[in-house]
Amino acid sequence: MKVVRMVLGPIGTNVYIAWKEDAKTCVIIDPAGDADRIREKLAELDLAPEAILLTHGHYDHILAVPELMVTCVVPVFAMEAERETLEDPQRNLTGRGRHPLSLAADRWLADGETVTLPSGLSFTALHTPGHTPGSGCFYFPEGNVLFAGDTLFEASYGRTDLPGGSGGQMLRSLLRLLTELPEETVVLPGHGEDTSIRAERRQNPVAPYLRAMEKENDADKPV
Picture 1 (cartoon, rainbow, N blue to C red):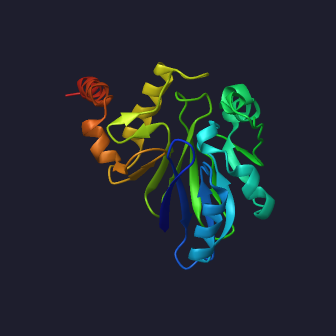
Picture 2 (cartoon, rainbow, N blue to C red; picture 1 turned 180 degrees about the horizontal axis):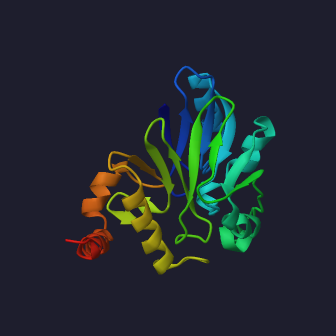
Picture 3 (tube, rainbow, N blue to C red; picture 1 turned 90 degrees about the vertical axis):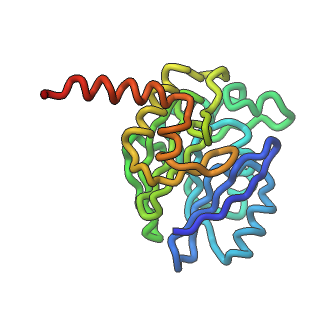
């Protein structure tokens, strides 16, 4: 599996193009803006998109979707729980600008659902609320890569003070990712630099909660 990152859009969002080695089709994760630049990169890589994946519905992750869909008629995937955020310009924050957007996914995903695309590229959708009610992460086992959106960052995590955000849900989502995924998983966040599950188990602000949880689990084991 190969991945290219572009930093695009009004506040510098990580936009990813991912594809199965030797394939001629790809997925676009979180097309944040600058649709022309995304199309130019696709042409440079000689790739045609087969799907668009949205980790969540905030404006800085979706602005290029309408323009891309003019020339790239491909399905858009998002978590079912993000339907309201994508459809409501006030909740997805495009209502604050001159071009409010209301979007709908072509396929709404359930937590734990696995999708295999025509190219053979496969991913599992993980519902990770906290930043928004329907925030999701996409785990690609072939590359052992997690596209984490605005849930998990390098030594940090996404905001919980925007509409639909929840600190408690964010904590539970982070602990889930840090306990359920292999330590060697590469984490590709919505903003900032790459990290790994192993690194975040040590350095993320929720690491003390993780250690306390593991200590409690150890104490419950029979001697």
